[in-house]
Length: 264
Image (cartoon, rainbow, N blue to C red; front, side, top):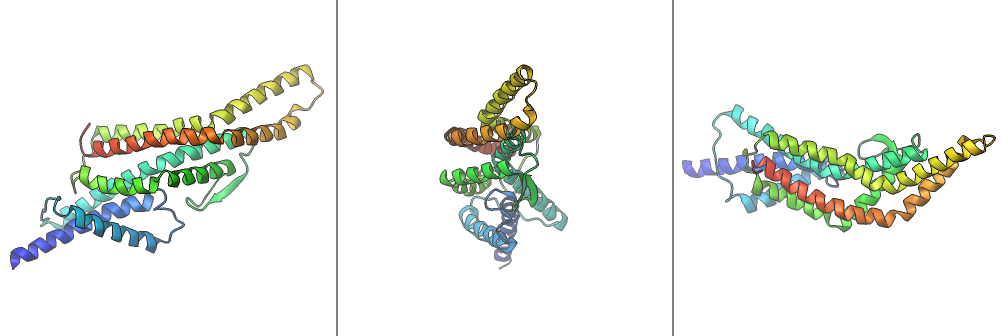
């Protein structure tokens, strides 16, 4: 009877630890962690996912009793840190797209035209919000929401409960993926940036050859028009680039899980 009670307590401990990891990922992941959804909905989703994953992995996870309450709370903090790190990696793709919108809007002259982002509850440039929703639509079409669910499940396969390794490979992988935000932004914004650069060069020539013309007054609406037209015509390029970036992001996501598992 005592052995059965200890076994049930062990399972409850495992379920709780899985819940903290899943909830941490859900709260910061793209799509599932959107502030559009009430906190109650996100917490309920974390409970449902944890229960499903627990039924799948309960026999794969080694049962260990934590007699010390302090050590158990230490494992909880450990799992929360793992969940937050994995969830943040999921956002890096969208951060790169928003960065592209930032630089496109700034070069076009839309730097002061901001809208409220419901997700972060901060002001972001209009072009950043436009590209963000475009990327979100492509993300759903590419079944990115399914990949995130798979990543949550894969985290328990790759990283045992309390077995995540915080070593230099994890820091290097996180820093490399953070740097990719700027690479993604430049790739997506390249057509508009080149078009605006050529426009600026042409306006500079006009300013030198026709000094009487007010180039600043002419250039402001011209850059806006060129930027909007280039953005519209480069949408197929952005869709193609998203496919390549998304595939690379998936591979980096799995590599990050492997780094947490201590596999280089």
